[in-house]
Image 1 (tube, rainbow, N blue to C red):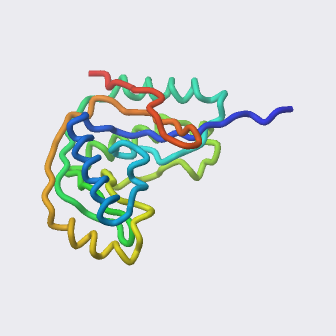
Image 2 (image 1 turned 180 degrees about the vertical axis):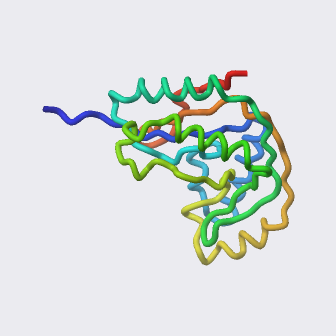
Length: 184
């Protein structure tokens, strides 16, 4: 009997293109100044569900649950305001307030049955909403300088979250698999 295929997914909010362009410019600055390019592997996004494996035969069920959730979801404002960090490697754009995103993430977890997850431990239980601009490959010895350069730097933008994105990993890159529009 052949092994069943499985795919790696990620669920996120994605800002509009003008903000994505800003974020890309900041990520490229991290690449040029500090040699940190890992954050460039995905467009700017706010993770609602960290990467998780789903068996191929559960994909339709995953889409159905996401569709059902988003039909009941209201659009809401998201404000990006300055920078923060998770030492010793992550620098991100702060989101304030975070309540609407946290509530959406909780609703998402309620909507996705644990049986969808190939590995139940991949189910995200809580989040600290943020938009990453430098991560994994930001060297620990370079982090203090990068953080010093960004901790007081200003960045402000806002948008209305109108959908969530299901990303799928090809084995090399992430791409938008599906967009789920909020119900109103």
